[in-house]
Amino acid sequence: MVAPEPQAALVGQQVLADGGDAADAAVAMGLALSVTLPSRVGLGGAGACLAFVPGPHAPDGGVPQAVLFTPQAAPIPPADTAAADRPAALPLLPRGLYLLHARYGHLPFEGLVAPAEELARFGTPASRALVRDLDVVAGPLFADPAARAVFGPDGRPIKVGALLREPELAATLGRIRVAGVGDFYQGALARLVVSGSAEAGGPIAADALRRALPSLAAPLVVNFDHDRVAFLPPPADGGLAAAAAFQTLAHDPRALAQAATRALAAAAAWRQGGVTPQAVLAGSPAAAGLPPLPASATFLAVDRAGGAVACATTMDNLFGTGRMVPGLGFLLAASPARTPPPLLAAALAWNPNLHAFRAAVGGSGQAGAGLAAAVAMDDTLRSGQPMPAVVPEPGRANVIVCSRYLPGDGGVCSGVPDPRGDGLAAGG
Image 1 (tube, rainbow, N blue to C red):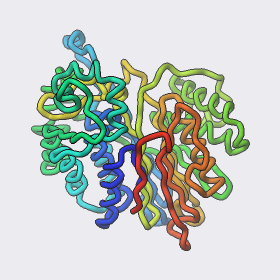
Image 2 (image 1 turned 45 degrees about the vertical axis):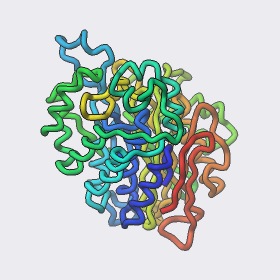
Image 3 (image 1 turned 30 degrees about the vertical axis):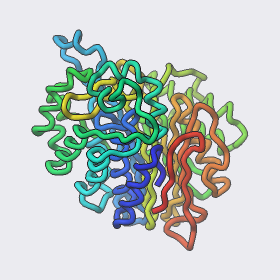
Image 4 (image 1 turned 60 degrees about the vertical axis):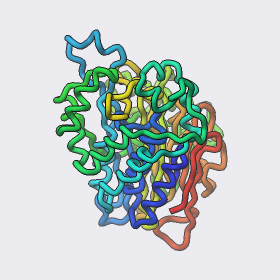
């Protein structure tokens, strides 16, 4: 397991120890991160995952699949336009993780919610990753009394190691555990989300919340020797940026400048519209930049059978709208209609002949996310070691790689978080 915050990685490790698979571990880590790193992961947020189950008789025939729950703007009724000073995105993380579990998980979903609920209820030491994000936005964040009560009860950001307790979030997670994810979107909990959303930057209409759905999609695939590398597809266009950069590096691993230019050009071409991802990868998109982009986070899971999941998540701004949904303990993500969405970048490498897993990476770091994923994957596949080279700034990469293939003949898999971050790799 690799996660950008240590407690979440340990949660994933325990799920594997309890007999779960990679999807179970990823779901539990994503929910745990909504407690321990709500600046980048939250019930009000969004993301995308790649999932792989080896074998020709696997759910997708042994080919990776993308689970997309990318940021979607909440439609604002004309009468409420003036109230929406910080427009919100639709909360998609709960349904996205539920779809990942429904298709690939094995353990009961409620058991995967429980660790996050316990972290929120009984408290967990504030990590360096969280405090680092708090230090950036504490001023505007603490203008919201509910956020200040959680992250700075004395008016200053909590310190590393201080006990972070989130009782209202624990209660919300408890309701999801007991009543199910559906309650969040069209039940009693949904009514609370809708009624409280206006105070958290919304408003979110009940019908928009009900229709907020994740989807399954085929990934973008690039060949590398005998292996294949799957990247997140648009609208998770960080995957397109990563695939474009990876194509360049596969021909010349020293061509970092060209790869960086091509990554941004590919994402810009997609965002301008009128082009398919396949056409972008087959051509030479004109050099173009992107506006300032929000933060994201990535986490990875691999099980002993060779199943793997790589996820990228976002609040579309550090701590989203910066306002808690009253009484529910979570922040709404910022609307992509106001803030450009991040480059959500993740990739999985596998061998289609052996039906076996080789490596997984996740890239973050604003405009550097796509290049980070590409460099990490290229270096990892060439060396067989997890990210021997540090990816260029501002990118960050988390990596898992197997020395051989999994399942296979005694290969050893290892993971590393980006050495400049504050994450953790934990064995399964």
